[in-house]
Length: 183
Length: 102
Image (cartoon, rainbow over all chains, first blue to last red; front, side, top):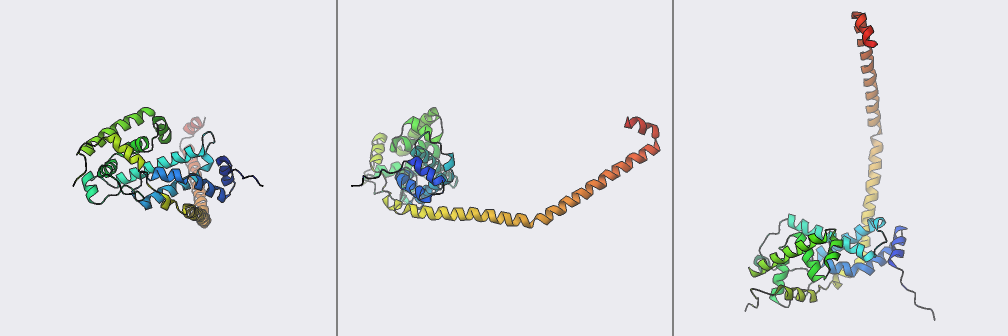
């Protein structure tokens, strides 16, 4: 009986991609898309935006693969790109103007993210609408901290901000959320 | 009936939101195929941009050559005018021209 072949490690797939093997990159994508979609779905407004963010993450990863230093796992590297891409989308959205009240958003049929199942409680819908009202920095930090259960150090590493800065933003985000939820 | 609590416990809401992770399985379906198609399109576009630049830059070669020729002629004329001016000055005041040149 032939023993089952163990899947190649990420580093091997990275090297193969750099050598021009596209199937290696497809395998890398299959391996990590779940985590990327998981994080991006916390920030995307709809399915189209989710698809855009995830595609841009992997396209950037492909074109910057030579910059990947193998001192940390590939997953960390791709999640860092995902975090930055989500932050870019939040900032773009803020620039395009999104300053409506929580109630107005709920009245207009606001949905936090398209693939989301129906929220079990109205308060949860209010939370998602309130999260959408935060500044991009606060939303990024509080989402990673509370919904993705990342530590302060992990968030600092993913965003490139200092741990103190992350703590301050998390504190301010909570205060703003409380205010918005009490309105 | 409005079930919404005016002062909801934020921690409880976070816990509830954590347990309701969005289902992305539909969005993930055939993602690699779409991604690779976009990657190929992007590579083709990059390749096209390079070839267009190469084509356009070759077309500008005569223009660049003409510019360089014009600059060379202009520089030659300017330097000859300067030499003439120095010669005339030396004729007008040979002593000053002698000391000026030393």
